[in-house]
Amino acid sequence: MSRLPSLGPRGEGWLALQLLLLLAIVVAAMAFPVQVDGSMEQIAQVVGLVGLVAGVIVFGLGIVTLGGSLSPLPKPLASAELVERGIYRFIRHPIYTGLILAALGGSIHAVSPLALLFTVALAVVLDLKARREEIWLRQQYAGYTAYAARTKKFIPLVY
Image (cartoon, rainbow, N blue to C red; front, top):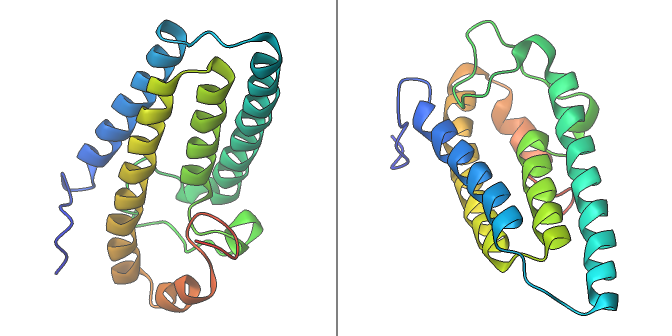
């Protein structure tokens, strides 16, 4: 038994936390930017845009590859299959990785330390959500433990 709470029969509370943090990031980025000099602002805009675009691409690849197994909730659908192809060959949670990258990119682009703080909180929540999700995935799929042993969670070859 895990100490990580399910926060609802299918993990609805984890999704609610995720959505609240995404909203907080957007609001903080729009309402609380910091003024920086011209060259630093340009660097932040370029780096932020690259992170934002990369995040959207990774997020999109995760969604497309999951197909009918897609659910915003951490407990997998009873009809879902274990997906190990496409981007899932390299990372187990590309949708979460994409959300974190996009939030980080947006926070940097806006030059908003408050949005960066909420992005860190989002990364922690998504890591915990992924841990809870993996408990359910191990229960549903006999091959999940082997898949997790050979595939990193969020960053290929790193974590």
